[in-house]
Picture (cartoon, rainbow, N blue to C red):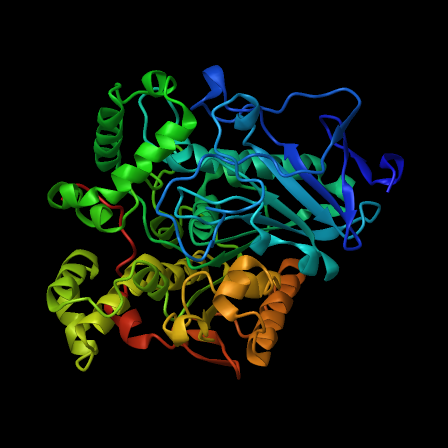
Length: 513
């Protein structure tokens, strides 16, 4: 199609020209902040520069160099994903961009969904085919997806730089949405922020950050991670990372290290955390060296304590998790079937809630094998209980929470994955034919998977439009949950034994041991 016939929209910074794809107007790689280069390398995001003429918005912007182990299923933008570039040149550091897919840029008042990708805070990209927004746009949503700084660029705790720069990037993107989304047919007063895994942890943080107030109306959080850390621990991690690079642990010194080299050293540090078991405690068992810091300024406290303590207001929240969260990691690491009694003891000692959580797990699951016990406590501590307790805290703060658990199993690896972490994402986007969708659900997804995919999509669209997910809201004492499976039902929370163990014990920041 000739360029003159492609969709154009005027933003506050200038005109962008997108492309018509699958009947929708799609705009990619729009800057919402200046590239973090030079003096801006580890700074808070700066407003984007205006431009003259028409800016082509046909390609995804580059992403921050990725950290973390390679994974066989490319879940969240790590490898082989269109648009992910590992480069140290200035143009390649134009990381702070977003994409808009709209059913009709000439419309008015369409509900908006802003997607924050996952990736353990160290990887991920909005360009992952798993996040293709066509199905959601076809249902009437304007879908925005963003890139933000991950890894050391976004979350290393550095002297001379603000903490949690990745969260600040997300806020800048949401501010851009408020300024511009009406020009794409969206309603800035009907914005839902959504994410999975680290993206859901980001959503949880945004719920309680003063700078994010008024930037969105509703929130969707799938598999909320409970990992934050104290400044004392984060300082030690930065010192160890800087020592590997032979520089001082400051923003000024690390600015002289290329982004790809910094990402690679963070990967190496994450693979070498066994040397820090005695001092870094729970963090050393996660395989990921950086995570959000409860720094007292950008993130003043954990989302759970802020909401439960009445220091943040509740909202309309759709939140949940998969049944077998940890299974993806045990299978992908090759450890499934090898966990020992000692492994289970370590998991219980580190991750079961103090002071009696380890004994409580053994009593609640008396017939569990060592591996089953380990997977249960890791699933609970890393994702399930932090998701449940976000629903509880949001309700306590005056919000309305809709809770779900995905129980539909993946057929991959002979069924070994179960209802694993990340399985819900291609189901929610309807991207069953994406590389991750095929890897988790097969080349020909079962009718049950297609039905659950349709149900989750309908819940997202209904929730983003009306604030109602389509099932009974979570009520303290009843704990009603939508159980998504071949025959979905609304019933009491299915992980009741774990809920009782964790009752009144919200996730706490990782700290020095």
